[in-house]
Length: 261
Image (cartoon, rainbow, N blue to C red; front, side):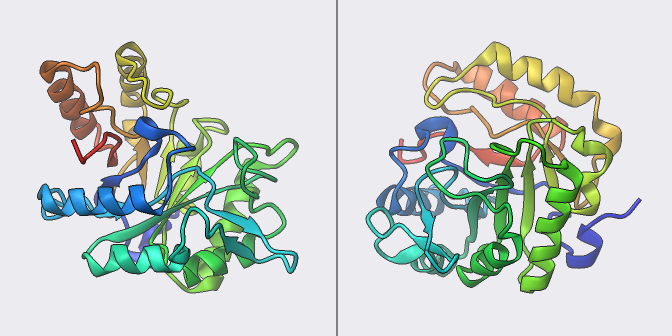
Protein backbone atom coordinates (compact mmCIF):
# COMPACT_ATOMS: atom_id res chain seq x y z
CA UNK A 1 0.00 0.00 0.00
CA UNK A 2 1.03 3.59 -0.67
CA UNK A 3 3.02 5.55 1.92
CA UNK A 4 2.74 9.33 1.75
CA UNK A 5 6.26 9.76 3.18
CA UNK A 6 7.69 8.18 0.03
CA UNK A 7 6.84 11.51 -1.68
CA UNK A 8 8.36 13.89 0.86
CA UNK A 9 10.77 11.88 3.04
CA UNK A 10 9.22 13.26 6.23
CA UNK A 11 8.82 11.44 9.56
CA UNK A 12 11.01 8.51 8.58
CA UNK A 13 11.52 8.23 12.34
CA UNK A 14 8.72 9.08 14.79
CA UNK A 15 8.43 12.88 15.14
CA UNK A 16 9.68 14.43 18.38
CA UNK A 17 8.79 17.80 19.87
CA UNK A 18 6.46 19.55 22.30
CA UNK A 19 2.78 20.47 22.27
CA UNK A 20 0.90 22.49 24.91
CA UNK A 21 -2.42 20.69 25.32
CA UNK A 22 -1.67 18.13 28.06
CA UNK A 23 -0.28 20.71 30.47
CA UNK A 24 -2.12 23.88 29.52
CA UNK A 25 -5.25 23.21 27.46
CA UNK A 26 -6.55 26.05 25.33
CA UNK A 27 -6.86 29.28 27.32
CA UNK A 28 -3.23 29.84 28.50
CA UNK A 29 -1.77 29.43 25.00
CA UNK A 30 -0.29 32.60 23.51
CA UNK A 31 2.91 33.83 21.88
CA UNK A 32 4.69 34.51 25.19
CA UNK A 33 4.08 30.96 26.49
CA UNK A 34 5.17 29.28 23.25
CA UNK A 35 8.34 31.38 23.04
CA UNK A 36 9.24 30.63 26.68
CA UNK A 37 8.84 26.90 26.04
CA UNK A 38 10.90 27.19 22.82
CA UNK A 39 13.71 28.79 24.83
CA UNK A 40 13.43 26.08 27.52
CA UNK A 41 13.50 23.33 24.89
CA UNK A 42 16.76 24.73 23.51
CA UNK A 43 18.37 25.48 26.90
CA UNK A 44 17.54 22.03 28.31
CA UNK A 45 19.35 20.23 25.49
CA UNK A 46 16.14 18.64 24.19
CA UNK A 47 16.58 20.27 20.78
CA UNK A 48 20.01 18.70 20.42
CA UNK A 49 18.50 15.33 21.43
CA UNK A 50 16.10 15.54 18.46
CA UNK A 51 12.99 17.29 19.78
CA UNK A 52 12.16 19.66 16.95
CA UNK A 53 8.44 20.25 16.30
CA UNK A 54 6.82 22.93 18.48
CA UNK A 55 3.95 25.39 18.33
CA UNK A 56 0.38 26.01 19.48
CA UNK A 57 -2.10 23.13 19.75
CA UNK A 58 -5.87 23.69 19.71
CA UNK A 59 -6.16 27.29 20.86
CA UNK A 60 -7.36 30.69 19.67
CA UNK A 61 -4.73 31.34 17.02
CA UNK A 62 -6.67 32.49 13.97
CA UNK A 63 -10.07 33.42 12.58
CA UNK A 64 -11.45 33.44 9.06
CA UNK A 65 -11.34 36.87 7.37
CA UNK A 66 -14.43 37.88 5.41
CA UNK A 67 -12.44 37.09 2.24
CA UNK A 68 -12.15 33.51 3.50
CA UNK A 69 -8.46 33.72 4.43
CA UNK A 70 -7.18 32.49 7.80
CA UNK A 71 -5.90 35.49 9.75
CA UNK A 72 -3.82 35.58 12.96
CA UNK A 73 -5.41 36.52 16.28
CA UNK A 74 -2.96 39.36 16.98
CA UNK A 75 -4.11 39.82 20.58
CA UNK A 76 -2.65 36.43 21.41
CA UNK A 77 0.08 36.29 18.75
CA UNK A 78 1.24 39.90 18.23
CA UNK A 79 4.13 38.86 15.94
CA UNK A 80 1.61 37.03 13.72
CA UNK A 81 1.68 33.29 13.18
CA UNK A 82 4.35 33.82 10.52
CA UNK A 83 6.42 35.76 13.07
CA UNK A 84 6.09 32.99 15.65
CA UNK A 85 7.26 30.51 13.03
CA UNK A 86 10.26 32.72 12.25
CA UNK A 87 11.19 32.72 15.97
CA UNK A 88 10.98 28.93 16.07
CA UNK A 89 12.96 28.45 12.85
CA UNK A 90 15.66 30.91 13.98
CA UNK A 91 16.37 28.53 16.89
CA UNK A 92 16.86 25.50 14.68
CA UNK A 93 13.40 24.06 15.38
CA UNK A 94 10.37 23.20 13.24
CA UNK A 95 6.97 24.85 13.43
CA UNK A 96 3.84 22.93 14.42
CA UNK A 97 0.30 24.26 13.97
CA UNK A 98 -3.20 22.90 14.57
CA UNK A 99 -6.30 22.62 12.38
CA UNK A 100 -9.56 20.70 12.27
CA UNK A 101 -11.10 18.76 9.36
CA UNK A 102 -14.65 19.86 10.24
CA UNK A 103 -16.55 23.13 10.37
CA UNK A 104 -14.99 24.35 13.67
CA UNK A 105 -12.31 23.27 16.12
CA UNK A 106 -13.40 21.19 19.13
CA UNK A 107 -14.09 24.21 21.38
CA UNK A 108 -15.53 26.02 18.33
CA UNK A 109 -13.12 28.91 19.00
CA UNK A 110 -11.50 28.63 15.54
CA UNK A 111 -12.76 27.80 12.05
CA UNK A 112 -12.25 24.30 10.65
CA UNK A 113 -10.91 23.57 7.17
CA UNK A 114 -14.10 22.05 5.70
CA UNK A 115 -14.74 23.70 2.34
CA UNK A 116 -11.44 25.63 2.58
CA UNK A 117 -8.94 22.76 2.47
CA UNK A 118 -6.81 24.16 -0.33
CA UNK A 119 -6.82 27.81 0.86
CA UNK A 120 -6.06 26.82 4.44
CA UNK A 121 -3.18 24.53 3.50
CA UNK A 122 -1.82 27.39 1.39
CA UNK A 123 -2.08 29.68 4.44
CA UNK A 124 -0.31 27.17 6.71
CA UNK A 125 2.42 27.00 4.06
CA UNK A 126 2.68 30.83 4.03
CA UNK A 127 3.03 30.79 7.82
CA UNK A 128 5.89 28.30 7.18
CA UNK A 129 4.41 25.41 9.15
CA UNK A 130 6.36 22.13 9.11
CA UNK A 131 3.82 19.99 10.96
CA UNK A 132 0.07 20.19 11.20
CA UNK A 133 -2.17 18.34 13.63
CA UNK A 134 -5.64 17.88 12.14
CA UNK A 135 -8.47 17.20 14.57
CA UNK A 136 -11.82 15.53 13.79
CA UNK A 137 -14.37 17.65 15.68
CA UNK A 138 -17.61 19.00 14.16
CA UNK A 139 -17.37 16.62 11.19
CA UNK A 140 -20.94 15.28 11.22
CA UNK A 141 -21.79 13.54 7.95
CA UNK A 142 -18.26 13.78 6.54
CA UNK A 143 -16.37 10.86 4.98
CA UNK A 144 -13.19 10.52 7.03
CA UNK A 145 -10.98 9.11 4.26
CA UNK A 146 -12.12 11.71 1.71
CA UNK A 147 -11.72 14.56 4.22
CA UNK A 148 -8.13 13.75 5.18
CA UNK A 149 -7.29 12.93 1.55
CA UNK A 150 -8.47 16.40 0.48
CA UNK A 151 -6.24 18.01 3.12
CA UNK A 152 -3.33 15.91 1.88
CA UNK A 153 -4.07 17.09 -1.68
CA UNK A 154 -4.26 20.69 -0.46
CA UNK A 155 -0.87 20.38 1.21
CA UNK A 156 0.64 18.95 -1.98
CA UNK A 157 -0.85 21.82 -3.99
CA UNK A 158 0.56 24.36 -1.51
CA UNK A 159 4.02 22.92 -2.20
CA UNK A 160 5.41 23.00 1.34
CA UNK A 161 6.21 19.61 2.90
CA UNK A 162 4.38 19.25 6.22
CA UNK A 163 4.05 16.35 8.61
CA UNK A 164 0.35 15.51 8.76
CA UNK A 165 -0.64 14.35 12.23
CA UNK A 166 -4.18 12.96 11.87
CA UNK A 167 -6.21 13.21 15.05
CA UNK A 168 -9.47 11.24 14.75
CA UNK A 169 -8.80 9.40 18.06
CA UNK A 170 -8.97 6.04 16.28
CA UNK A 171 -12.30 6.79 14.58
CA UNK A 172 -12.38 5.32 11.08
CA UNK A 173 -9.49 2.94 11.96
CA UNK A 174 -6.86 5.23 10.40
CA UNK A 175 -4.10 2.61 10.69
CA UNK A 176 -5.78 0.82 7.76
CA UNK A 177 -5.58 3.75 5.28
CA UNK A 178 -3.91 6.88 6.66
CA UNK A 179 -0.34 6.03 5.62
CA UNK A 180 -1.27 7.15 2.10
CA UNK A 181 -2.35 10.65 3.20
CA UNK A 182 -0.46 11.40 6.42
CA UNK A 183 2.53 10.56 8.57
CA UNK A 184 0.95 9.65 11.92
CA UNK A 185 -2.51 9.06 13.30
CA UNK A 186 -4.03 9.01 16.75
CA UNK A 187 -5.19 5.54 17.70
CA UNK A 188 -7.31 6.39 20.78
CA UNK A 189 -9.03 9.22 22.66
CA UNK A 190 -7.07 11.86 24.59
CA UNK A 191 -4.57 10.65 27.15
CA UNK A 192 -5.64 13.21 29.76
CA UNK A 193 -7.48 16.45 30.38
CA UNK A 194 -5.37 19.63 30.57
CA UNK A 195 -3.18 19.54 33.67
CA UNK A 196 -4.66 16.21 34.80
CA UNK A 197 -2.22 13.36 34.23
CA UNK A 198 -4.10 10.05 34.07
CA UNK A 199 -1.85 7.02 34.63
CA UNK A 200 -4.56 4.32 34.28
CA UNK A 201 -5.75 5.83 31.00
CA UNK A 202 -2.18 6.04 29.70
CA UNK A 203 -1.67 2.32 30.40
CA UNK A 204 -4.98 1.43 28.74
CA UNK A 205 -3.90 3.39 25.64
CA UNK A 206 -0.51 1.63 25.59
CA UNK A 207 -2.08 -1.85 25.64
CA UNK A 208 -4.48 -0.96 22.82
CA UNK A 209 -1.84 0.79 20.71
CA UNK A 210 0.55 -2.17 21.06
CA UNK A 211 -1.82 -4.35 19.01
CA UNK A 212 -1.49 -2.00 16.01
CA UNK A 213 2.27 -2.39 15.49
CA UNK A 214 1.94 -4.14 12.08
CA UNK A 215 0.64 -0.87 10.53
CA UNK A 216 3.51 1.37 11.63
CA UNK A 217 6.86 1.99 9.98
CA UNK A 218 9.10 4.67 8.49
CA UNK A 219 6.95 7.68 7.56
CA UNK A 220 3.72 6.24 9.02
CA UNK A 221 3.27 5.90 12.76
CA UNK A 222 0.63 4.92 15.30
CA UNK A 223 0.18 7.85 17.70
CA UNK A 224 -0.95 6.90 21.24
CA UNK A 225 -1.09 10.65 22.04
CA UNK A 226 1.34 13.14 23.53
CA UNK A 227 3.45 12.27 26.55
CA UNK A 228 2.45 12.82 30.17
CA UNK A 229 6.00 12.29 31.50
CA UNK A 230 7.04 15.24 33.67
CA UNK A 231 3.52 16.32 34.56
CA UNK A 232 2.56 16.87 38.21
CA UNK A 233 1.40 13.75 40.00
CA UNK A 234 3.69 11.18 38.37
CA UNK A 235 6.53 9.52 40.23
CA UNK A 236 10.02 9.18 38.77
CA UNK A 237 9.32 5.47 38.18
CA UNK A 238 6.08 6.28 36.34
CA UNK A 239 7.85 8.91 34.22
CA UNK A 240 10.59 6.45 33.21
CA UNK A 241 8.14 3.60 32.62
CA UNK A 242 5.89 5.80 30.50
CA UNK A 243 8.79 7.08 28.41
CA UNK A 244 10.14 3.55 27.91
CA UNK A 245 6.74 2.29 26.71
CA UNK A 246 6.35 5.15 24.22
CA UNK A 247 9.84 4.40 22.85
CA UNK A 248 9.10 0.67 22.60
CA UNK A 249 5.95 1.45 20.58
CA UNK A 250 7.91 3.68 18.17
CA UNK A 251 5.43 6.40 19.14
CA UNK A 252 5.96 10.05 18.24
CA UNK A 253 7.56 11.68 21.29
CA UNK A 254 5.68 14.94 21.79
CA UNK A 255 6.46 16.21 25.28
CA UNK A 256 3.45 17.70 27.05
CA UNK A 257 4.86 19.04 30.32
CA UNK A 258 5.95 22.55 31.37
CA UNK A 259 9.57 22.56 30.20
CA UNK A 260 10.23 25.80 32.12
CA UNK A 261 10.11 23.63 35.28
